[in-house]
Length: 288
Image (tube, rainbow, N blue to C red; front, side, top):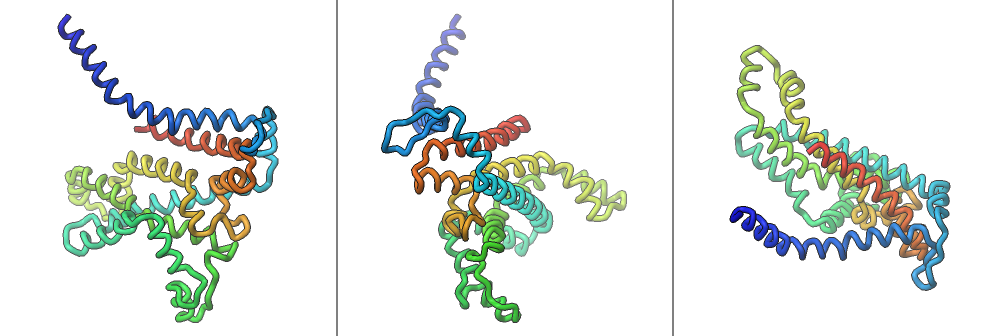
């Protein structure tokens, strides 16, 4: 009886502590989420009363070539950044997973880009890829005799530049996660393989990579969620341009919501994006 009363008291105490968090989530997440879902079935410009339109926004959405293009750009961006970040993160973690000052310095340098604020890193990337003759990349191109390019202002190169920025910015974080995973692999597996005469390539392929599978899956899902949600880097670097070359779903939603004041249509787009993210979030939670 005493234990039951104690457990009840602990439950009440725990509820008191988590109530502020629940209120915060309700105000800034659940209520806006329900509101966006409701608005997606209306026509609303924020100045006039809402007008219910049923599924009209969704039918218009999936027949809009600009939305379909934004969806494809988001898909290309997400698959490209996820693949490169996971591959390079594992590669550099394996290469630098050794004792010594050089390896430690290399890990530190790789991780430095991950801790630099996003806008500061974006400003550095603009300096690297700027159209000016004195930008770092154009200076290198001129030195090699290849001619200068307007990297972020070229519709054929802008998306590649944005992908390159994210890979440059986040490879260090992925490398750090893989390094932690490598430190958790028992050395007896590698030692036994060396005794059997296995080469380093086979040790990596047959032992290290399979044992890192849970971390690889975690990073794939995490990077894919981040890829679908991306907004700030794209908006800072290109604002979705030139034209619609880098208009991902988030910038598409922003344009229709805050530039054209079509909040019902923008909300329908947001519901589609939220649904995609929730699917990957569910997969991630199932695999943890």
